[in-house]
Image (cartoon, rainbow, N blue to C red):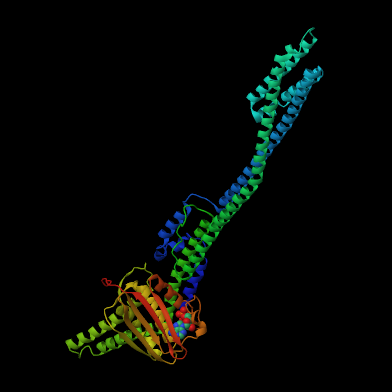
Length: 524
Ligand code: ADP
C-alpha cells in the first residue's frame, strides 16, 4: 500500500508547485486541457473590451460636480458685476438728474430775475462731463444710441443757454425775444430729466430682479447639487457594490464545485475585470488540481483494494499452476478429451486473471470525460467486482435491489465508477466487524434514477455530517478526506445530487440522483 501512496504523495507535491497557469507539464495531460478553450474564450472576452475604469468614472463624477460649482461661481461673478455696473449707472444717473434739475432751477431764476445763467451753464457742463466720463458704463447699460440722444439733448440745452447769455449782452433784448429759447430750453430740460429718471427707474427694477435672482440661484444650485450627489453616490455604489455582489455569487458557485470561468458581464473593462481574470486563472488551477485529486483518490482506492486485487489474481494463477502441474504429471495417461478440458480450464483461469487486470487498467485510466448513456447495472457490477474480496474479508453481506435492470443514466463511466467505489469502500470501512451493504436502484421520477448505498455501520455523528463533503475532512487514521468531496463534485458535474442520511450505530445511506438517459448504451 505504501508503494502505491508514495508516488501519489509525489504527484500531490508536484501539483503544489504548479504556480503558472500555462505550465507545460500540466498541459501535456490530456484531461487537463479540456477547459482551456472555454477559459481562453472567457479571458479574451474579459480583456478585449474597451476600458472604462471605476477610477475614471469617479474622476468624471467629481469633474461634473466641479463644473457645476464652477458654473454657479461664474454666474455669481457675472451677476455681481452686472449689479455693480447698474448701481454705478444709477449713481451717475442720479447725479446727472441732479445737475440738470439745478440747471433748470437757475434757468427759471434767469427768466424771473435775470440771474444765475452762468450757474446753469456750469451745471450743464458738469452733467455733460458726467455723461462723458461714465460713457462706457452708461452705454453698457442703456446702449450707445440712448447715450448719444442724451448727449444731443445736453448739447442743444447748452447751446440754448449760450444763446441766452449772448442775447442778454446785446442791448435792447426784450423779454419777448427770449420766448422761443425758453420754450425750447424747457422742452430739452424736461426730456433729459424724464429720460434720465426713466432709465434710473428701469435700472432699479433690473437691479431688484438681479438681486432676487442672486438669492434664488444658491437655492437652485443646492437642489441641483443634492440631486447630482445622490445620483453620483448611487451610480458609484452600483459600480462597486454590483460587481461585489456578483463576485460573492461567483465564490458561492465555486464553493459548490462549479469551476466554469467567469464571463464578461458588462460592456466595459474595469478594475473588477482584472479580478475576474485572476479568479479565472485560479479556477483553472483548482480545476487542474481537482483532476489530480480524482486521480490520486483512484490510486488511494487501488491501495485500499490491493489485497483483494492480489487475491483476484492469485486464485486463477494458483489454479493455472495446479492444472498445469497435474497435466504434466498425467500427460501420458489422460485421454485427449481430458487434456483438452484441462487446457480449457487453464485458458479460462488466464482469462479471469486478464479480466481483473483489464478492469484495474480501465479504472486507473486517465481519460477525457465523455458523457454517454451508462447502464446502472453494469456500472455497479463492475465496481462491486473491484470490492468483492474486500467485502469477503470484512464479512459484509451484499444485497442488490433493482426495480428495473435496464436503467440508463447520462454520464462518464469512469467518473461514476469512481463515485460508487468511494461510497462502497466507505460503507465497508464503516462496518469493521461486518454487516450488511444494500445497493438499491430505482426510478425516482421519469427523469431521474436514484441509487442508494446503505450500510449498517457506525453511522456519522450529527456534529460532523455537514463537514464530510469538505476536501481533506477525514476521521480515519489513514484517510485522505477526498473521497466524498470528489464524489460530490463529480455528481454536481453530472447535474445530479448526493444526499446522506445517517443514524449513529445504525448505519448510513448515501443517495445518488442522476439524470436518466433514454439514449443508447455506450458501446464498450
Ligand atoms: P476518507 O474515506 O479518506 O476519510 P471521505 O471523504 O471518503 O474520506 O470521507 C470523509 C469522512 O466521512 C470519513 O472519514 C468518515 O468519517 C465519514 N464517512 C463517509 N462515509 C461514511 C459511512 N458510510 N459511514 C460512516 N462515516 C462515513
